[in-house]
Length: 293
Image (cartoon, rainbow, N blue to C red; front, top):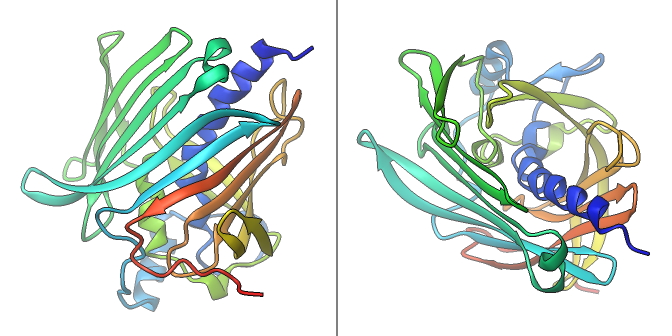
């Protein structure tokens, strides 16, 4: 018999990791030696900026990605990412909305309705505002983070519990979504080092700033609904436990073209496996390269 309680917990975490993964996969952008390296340190970023000229953006306003999450034969949910534009304090920003929800039969057993929003600079990619509104089977959160780069602090407003928290802006900190788009524009494919793990500092909740590790696993060709796609494979290192079978059970495949978009995310769970596939796209800035047989 299917353990819907376990699947429910897995779905909630997998939706979060879907957004987390697309916000982190591109962080392996510099060659390095030794073990792990925190790639968002001031020193690393300064060195990176001195070495690279500004390149054409990997995305544009209007880009829309849709992912289908399924557990075996069950279509469990959908997640979307949509790029818009806005202004914050007269600063031109991108406004990205990420939304994920369970649908159909799956929603009867584990209803999830999550929305994430990020506002980050068009010129520098710095996050200015992040919003997280979630409803997971009655468990809700309503969090807003405002990043004050002049004062070098972030103010988190927990609207549900009516409390505020201040965090120091460590190095080049990013939120859950801004990291994805920032690093898409600061990504050198030739410098990926297979087997190496990198660390990115993140802030998106009242748990505070945390490190998230990501390992590059090499290239792989995937069969998709669009055809064969050459991809870079990454492995976000997540904690093992009741949901994920082991520390390296989550894998991520990213298109090896100028778009650098997620094509597939897969996780082995304690009760089977769950997978998210790119299901539809629109408004890509570059051609989505399909391998023709």
